[in-house]
Image 1 (tube, rainbow, N blue to C red):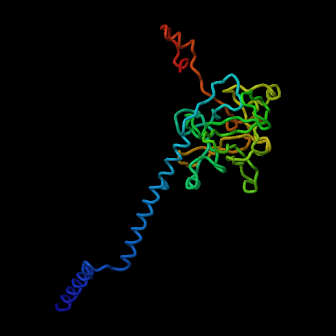
Image 2: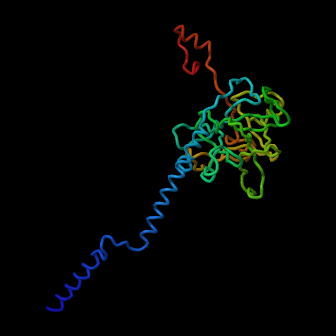
Image 3: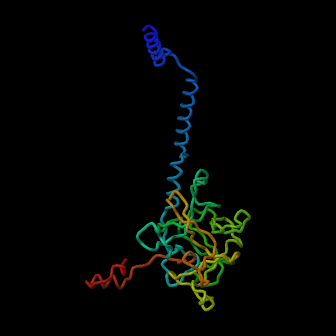
Length: 302
């Protein structure tokens, strides 16, 4: 009986020594001072960055303000003109996430998490994606610019070479969509991006969506809301919406590439079909009829 009792006492003594405080309260164990100094330095550094708006949260908010700044679209819907603001929309993309069968996708610029530390505005090298937000803002509004001379106010014709310039109203260098066939993209679909330099790889042109009618429409002006194909002139490939999604600050958005998607009849599929849209003005006659008490459809006066 003596041996079990001694074993029990030894176990209790070991448990007591394991839970007791080995040092008195004023005693500082280990690198206590160094850890305290590092914590104070971290607080001072975060305060320094906060006072100068250099925190990641502050940069993200500034980026949202810059890119989501509202813009005014063109009212000239009879024909598309150089130098005016438009949105480039893919109207027939199949949507598997919502109840609607198709979802309009808008061409837009993007700032990634790697670029937000250095710049909160669209700059050289930023990617091009397809967003689902149709509200006209800086990131999804474009201008069609002439390649050889200033063509502001002139109508755009099928087959004309032009640059796609993203809207920036801060007075800095304009940015154009560029798609270059580099060694890194060999074997993959070409990825467009924003560039400060205009050159051969920035040239695009509009084609009629029906291959059988392209020759007949060559040289005629392009109307807004007409289905068109945007072709990259140097490579002969069409601007397309990929089925893959990429995570961004604005949610999951579609990947954009320069690749021609065709069906068995050699016709471009919905990935290559685009619309250049502006701002629809309300019908004045419909508003007058509605003011007189007549029944007018709501879409006529919106």
